[in-house]
Amino acid sequence: MQSRSDQRAGLVFGIAAYTMWGLLPLYWHLLDAASPSEILAHRMAWSLPVAVVILAAMRRWAWIRPLLRQPRRLGLVLVCAVVISANWFLYIWAVNAGHVLEASLGYFINPLVSIAFGVFFLRERLRPLQWTAVGVGALAVVVMTVAYGKMPWIALGLAFTFATYGLVKKGIKLDGIEGFSAETAMQLLPALGFLIYLGARGESAFVSGGVGQALLLAGCGVATAVPLICFGASAVRLPLTVIGMMQYLAPTFQFVLGLTVFHEEMPAERWAGFGLVWVALAVLTWDALRTARRVRVELAEAAARAGEAAAEVARAAAEQARTARTTQAGPGPADAAGPTP
Image (cartoon, rainbow, N blue to C red):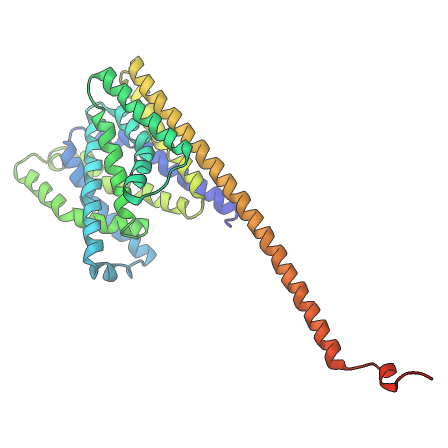
């Protein structure tokens, strides 16, 4: 069990990670002079050097050679790199195109999509409240589709790409920084090729945007890696139930930014859709907390029963030992003398 100081540190790291992820729209907005595709390419290109520095500091190189010997895992890493690149591009485009609120919706419904993936692809069984949450989330999508006259494709695209990313990563079995490094290594060459192409055409904001713009584009790697590091530090110190609740911080920050900083419209039908999603998440969170509490009680009861059984075994062993010693000692002096006259 983690100490209280470790748990406090885990909370600090977790809040820092999700806060940084939630505030990323402000960073992408500073780069709106560049195209979303160029921002993505810089994010991909600069992430690998940051990852290499982290790996060097941690001396975590042993995983590379075994990975290179396993084509199936390498294929899964490639799939992850492609899917997360699509997720990053869609998110950057949505922010700079004025769709921060819908982007936040995508990360709100992501847990529901992940649960649905667990059912369809991993044959997981859902509890009744989980089915309820997924159903309410689906109803929210229907409400928004009817109200707007079109599917909330940005939100769905973000939710489905990130859920796919999480699903595929289950088969790779690499830690956070290791998986991140492997994925960015596969992203590097396409990113560099695209950036060279932009430079040759004279369309590179990195070259033409001045020193400030160049530094901001180079900082994409840090903006990508630092929250991931904080998340990894949090994940090893906190229970999954706490991590699961904290994940709503990021889309909440994004939602607030969409309303207060980017001044996006929030008509009644959008409030209705978001409201249904929040109800679904509340049901999901309540079910997770209740299940975790029940599991803790069951584990405590099992531990108590195991302790009682161990004590009973110890008592029985002690009794057998006493019996054995008595038998080996033989009859007492009175018995040896025979009956008295």
